[in-house]
Amino acid sequence: MRCPECDASENRVVDTRTSRGGRAVRRRRECLVCETRFTTYEYVEERPIQVLKRDGSPQEFDRSKLLRSLKIACAKRPVSALVMESIVDGIEDVLSRQAGVEVPSERIGELVMDALRPLDRVAYVRYASVYRNFQDIGEFQEFVDELETRQRQELQALNQVELPLRQG
Image (tube, rainbow, N blue to C red; front, side, top):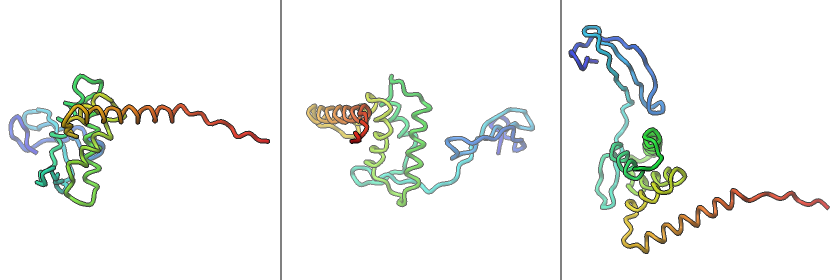
């Protein structure tokens, strides 16, 4: 590993930790020539994930693109960068474990929506409005109505109290 400051290859590892949920190793290094400290990351080389776009064209999975779309949906919402990173990590894990190397973009959109739904309703609706590509206000209203109905049913299920059976 070459030092980013002086380009020397003599360095020592000062600290080693796992990163990204165990999917990477973070190493803190010190150059033995100029004493600069720098960080390196090691990843397992994985097979590339191909995303099948709506028009049928394949595109290589881009983690940063997914994170960017989450940041847009979560703008000015109480969702931390760490939470967004963990959502992307989880989605990437799910995709890399699937048998095929080609994943429809719709599958990724559903995974994002599943992660956002319990986290933040506004971010969920923002993401869904772009992902589902609503054509008019009526489609959007139907989506919001379905969301409200689902939330009401979930709340009702949580508030249900089991009554003891009466023994006669």
